[in-house]
Picture 1: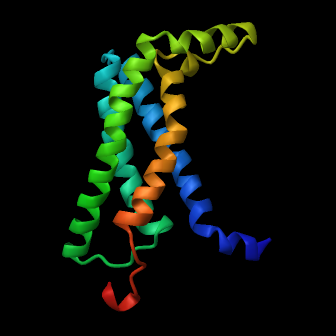
Picture 2 (picture 1 turned 90 degrees about the vertical axis):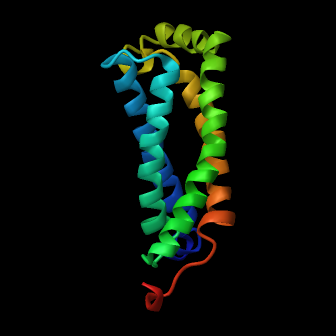
Length: 159
């Protein structure tokens, strides 16, 4: 089991932090829609910014184990990271409101009512559309980070 974990450690840790990043996105989205009464579009943009900041730090340190904290390396990684996340962010920023406008969430709200799911979080406008995009976004973000952002692990001498 331990051998299997180490073989797939990067993917396992990425999934864990991807889930946590998704919760940061969804949680901040719900807060901005419900507490601050922002529109779906505005709350979605702000939640994206929160989740990208969280994801960069966790991906650098724990997922791809980028050891270098040289300013040049951090800037290069951060720019590549934010750029790649901007691509998937645009997909989400325009996709979620579009999916909401099609009535996508209504399908799930009916199911929630049918099964007596009364958690307020799941009755947040647009949350089911955000969930639908989450899987695609997580996969795309891994591919971009692996191929373009954190290309090689840094040695201790580069710290």
